[in-house]
Image (cartoon, rainbow, N blue to C red; front, side, top):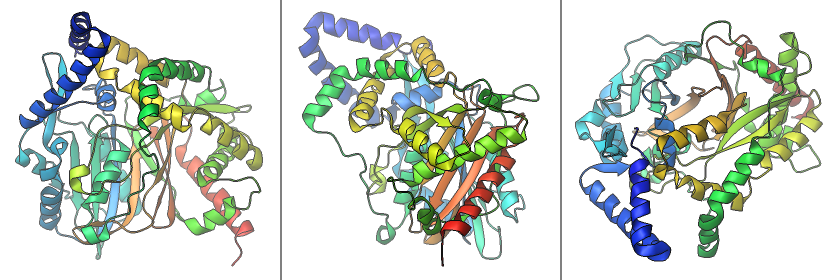
Length: 471
């Protein structure tokens, strides 16, 4: 990828030298749209900013995302044919591999059969949730073949007498969580399609233009502000390892799930308007305090945390599916304190800083220039973005209604991903069909015990429900 960005800068220089800024910009927009159209005709897609940033780790790091779905029993043949006919044949990325040509990073179509061959039948016996978590860990940590599409599906036909289980793995260069959610939403049959929720509507033309013009400078200003955030030295011990870093991650799940309506009653009791995200961050902060102290670490106060904001609504059909990495990354300081009220207030304030509509679209427009930067600058940006972070936090809201694959109901969804760069710990909360699930992913050499943190959060939520939810 050495020439990536150099080619683009030369093109920009020549264009603006010959045509000036206004006509040069018009020429570039027209040329890019024409090139994209011609590339698509030849079976190629350009990488967007998110794909490109995540591809910088190839081939040295298995930065994969994935998990599992437990579903009504289905044969492997029916499962494979449905995924292929309804999904792979209609989404170019699912049958493409990553290539570099003439200084450009592209997705190159390998043909429909290449996509079909990424669907596997798992012969390993899996009979319990713990077995399922361990299998997901093994598969998601597994190395990708970069000469093939960067995703895999594995089906356990006989998870139980009535259920099968699907294992999912995508390299993060191929897709982000929002793209994967959109894909499986569109896999639902038309009469069972989830409602489209455009949480982030397209901005008016004037706002879009302003964000495009000042986006780069304003985003650099925001990034500079975020550099002042930090993980205090005591809390930084969350990244301490007992052995050499192998990049292998262990997966953990809480033993119990929770009825979301009961959790809702817990966080609705606060006088100040409190969302589920505010509440669960506060609960996490309180139990991080206990967790550190149980490991003999006194005085941990805050941890710089990374989270992603998905700005896409659900696709209306498979032709609208977009697997590109389009989520916006952000930082905040998660407080580590024993008082829940204070933990919620501080977490809410810190989380929402610079996450207004205008800032998010400025960051998005700034990200659009990434494909035109030299690789060394992109690597510097990524290293700066992750600098000092101690944890990744993700709140994944799936549908309250069931998902279906080949008319089979998905009964449970488990979410996992591998921490990356210098971050060693990843905490995930997910909701599906009015159930709340807790999971964690950590470097296998992590000194502190991730399962214990999940146990503490579980015990705390059980206590909250017992005290504040009246039958």
